[in-house]
Structures are given as structure tokens and as C-alpha cells.
Amino acid sequence: MDKLGRLDRMVMKYVILAAVFILVIFNYQHIFAGLRELWDIISPVVYGFVFAYILNLIMVMYEGFWFSETDNELLIRARRPVSILLALITVIIVIVLVLWLIIPQLISLVQTLLENLPLMVEYIQRWIEDLEEIYPQIDTLINNLNINWESIARDAASFANNILGSTFTTFQLLTSSLFRLVIILVVAIYALFSKEKIQRQVKRVLRAYIKRDHFRRLKYVLRVTNESFSSFITGMLIEAIIYGSLVTVGMMIFNFPYAGMIGALSGALALVPMVGAILSAVIGTMLIFVQNPIQGLFFLLFNIVLQQLESNAIYPRIVGGSIGLPGIWTFIAVTIGGGILGPAGFILGVPIASVIYKLIRSNVEYKEHHYELDHESELTF
Image (cartoon, rainbow, N blue to C red):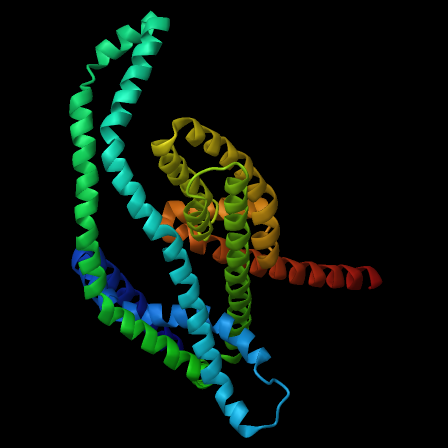
């Protein structure tokens, strides 16, 4: 009877799973729409915990400096709030500094672009006409393309004006998102104040509903995940500072324009693994090309050399070394992560790959160790 009862329960379980699977297949659009609505509701809380995780790295550093050896009860109680405040101030200072370096020059650049756009189109047209005199084949190719330079100039000017007009729309959108930002900030601060309590509560729930052996394995996975992500964030910040500084110093040495803005932009975009440096090079080249095409080309050459240094020496050693992931796997993780998750995958692909790499390596070492022990016991027998 017991065997028949277990068989009935097993059959019922698989029938229910099959029914759920069929319902999901035929109603996936409604399910995805519901999940999107649910995400819109809980996303501020999720982002709040993510922000708290990043702030925690800075907060822990300040807690280590805040009278770590003192017995004064007042100083001990003030350690957490003071450290949270200093961590928030640090993040705000960095953001304001980057924006202060980028926004004023970017506005000036857009104004210059609008003023000089017709001249740029005329310059390119004259340059192509000069090439036509030297290489007659180009004249045939250009005529076949039927390029209307006046139309291009009008369309480019209209596009630039639309960008300026959308700035006000973007500002209104950011203003309307203030409530979500407040929620994120409140959740992050609460999580930092109560992180030990939250950890104890999560641990109690896991112990209550998960078997001891599974809980031990899950605890190890979470520890490896925390180490990989914290090391990745720290390494990325260091790498971004180094790369942004190299861009700024190099541009000052070669007397390129917009050194401060492009250097700050390069450092900020360097937080996106591998791809960020390429984006900063393209944007910087376009900005400089508007003012001086020759300098724009030299800046592109300068960035190619610098990116070789960054991708082959700085990034693998600082970021890959900090998370224990070899350079080739770092590149593969960025490629696959970006292909699956888009921009988020470029950032999350590396730490996730590091977690998988460490877990597989640990499991392989464990199995090799037991294989050697079993092999030795067989030889001894």
C-alpha cells in the first residue's frame, strides 16, 4: 500500500507539473505582462538592496577607521550612522564631480556643433571633391550614390535640435522618478542599519525550510558569490579610476581638447567591462572630430594604443585577478553576458562567471582529492 501511495503521489506531482507547464505555454503573454507589472512594483526595493550592497563596501571601510579600538559606548553607537553618512557623501561627491566635468563641456560642445554643422558638411563635400579630381573612379561611385548634401545638412541640424529638445523631456522624466529614487535610498539605508538582523532572519528561514546538507552547500555558494561580486565591484572602481586618469593625462600631454570631460566619461564608461572603453573612444573621437578632424583621428589612434594596454594589462590583472578569473574567461563572460542580457550582461557576466568558475574548480578539486584517496586505498589493499 505504501508503494502504491508513493506511486500515486509521484504520478499526481508530474500531472500537476505538466498542467502548469501547459498553462504557461498557452498564457505566456499574460504571465509576462503580469511579471512586468510585478517588477515595476518591486524594482525600487530590489535596486535599494543592490545600492545597499555597493554602499556596504564603502561603509565597512569607514567602520574600520572609525575608532575601531575604542571602548566608548557613544562612539561605538555612532559608528554605523556616521559610516553610512560618509559612504553616501562619497558616492554623491563622485557623481557630482563626474557630472561637473562632463555636462558643462557637453552643452558647449552641442552648441558648437549646431553652429558649425553646415561648415562641417561643406568641408566633407570639398574633401570628397578633391578626392574625385585625384581618383576619377570615386566621382562615378559618388554619382551612383546620389548624395544630396543639402538634405543631409538639414537632417543633421534637425536631429541635433531634436536632441536638445529631448533634454527637457529627459529632465521631466528624471523629476518624475524622484519618488522611486527616494524609495531606493530609504531601502538602502534601512538595509545597512539592519544588515546583521536581516542576515540572521534569512539564515533562520533557510535553516527551517532547507535540509542541513543543502543549507551548508547554499551557504558556501552565497559566500563565494559575495566574495566574487564584492571583489569585482572593487576591482572595477580601481580600474575605472586608472583608465580615466590615463586618458586625461594622455590627452593633456598631446594637447587634445576636452581632456577633463572625455577622461571623466572614459572612467565612468570603463565600469562597463571591455565595451565601455570602446564606447568612450568612439564618443571622444566624434567630439574632437567636430572641432578638429585631424586631432580626432590622432585621438582615435591614441585610444587604440591605450585600449590595448587596458585590455591586455590593466583589466585582466586588476579585475580578473581580483575575482580569480583568467583573462580568456573574462572576455568570454563579457561576450556571452552581453549577448544574453544586453548592457546588464556586460556588467553581470564577469562576476557570475567568476562564481561558476570557483564553484566548478572547488568541486573538481574535491573530486580529485577523493579520487586520489580511493586510488591509494585500492593500491594499499
